[in-house]
Length: 570
Image 1 (cartoon, rainbow, N blue to C red):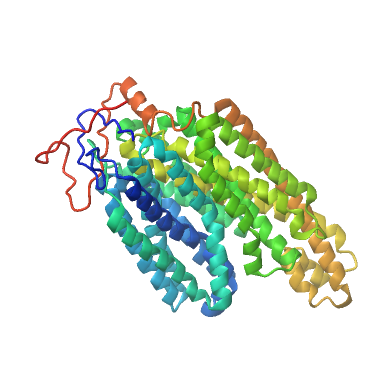
Image 2: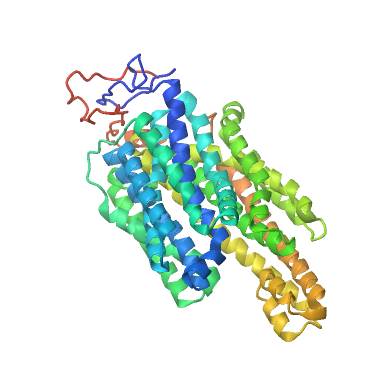
């Protein structure tokens, strides 16, 4: 197994399970580390989508409006996205293992509080706290992989992480729907609590610590500015579809987000190597193409979910549990191909692997646009879903690896947080834009099909296909005509959204072919381009982080008695 080259002056203690003293954990410990971070990530991902299946139950339990219920769901994502960059950077400094342990404890306590919440106010507070815990966990899970696994194994480990991040939401939603059906919505929080317990035990036992030894102060202003920017932009994307894009609250949030983002970029440019995130690195093609690919891929994936659930429930009349089960083939394929993508990238290159995945994803959208029909039902969209699952899995893993490999090893918490923020932005964009296209297409198509329908029922039907299904119950002899009009109009809106997705994927494919990452596999290892640029700029490379065995202090390089340098390698 290859040893890893530290920066000059960095020292490393032998890692646990490494009898050769190289500081690299042995194969068994690496497997346990991967299981630990995957289970922790699954807890975070499952909580993003789990409450979607319990909206009606929440409204009844708390006597809450639809707006309040949506805030209970969305505020978790908002807190998570806003805090990813600062908490990822703090984890780099104080140690990734302590941050992961603290995050799991916070997240577990918040999940228990949410499951026992007697009021909507306490539920909202619990969801905010869950978001804080999730922001402590999510970037660290990937940073542990990129800072612990040797280069030969890193790609496969990232593939597993990416598969959980991509398909875990669907699996979590299915398990949540099952718990709601057989028990109650409060049992939804048993799943994350159980996952946290397993992840915490494995982390304490197997995960080594690693940290950054920074020669500069923490970028507090940059961290606060990033929180304001992400909060404003994500809030605008969440509220726009609900309250309107021209609503004062939406425009105010968007303005604050854009101004804060501009201030963040200016601040980081002035800080250079001491920045929270060195934005100059976006000139590097791997970081730029990887970020754009993840943004689009997760946007399309989230947008597809917005389109699929109304089709399965309102058009085909399936239950929430059966609808989530219908998404499982796509999720399973996504997880499988995420694990296979590193092998393919090692053979044909990351750019070719990403381009293949994007092309398959675009083909899947085209298949769903061409063959979807009310009469054809689930089988009319299944081939497109399978192609989407294959394509998303192939595109996500090399994109994630491109991002993490573009920042130095000691900044992997920030690299992982950037990866996660990109996913959250993509998800919010996809839901907002594809959802808006679907709604616009539905409304323009349904108007011409409502002639002869009673006015009250027709007005209700114009609000959406689910409203039309509800109104059909009181439409008397016009029931079937109203259902047919709404269902066919939904398919028209579906096709409009799918073709828009095809166009976006085609543009992404062109970008990756022209500006995608070069080379085979992970290249020179995490951080090589960033370190090369630091050398060209005349600044010293930051000391490489090192594993710290459980029970040992994370002393500064060379300060511990008997410490010795890592063996130099390629």
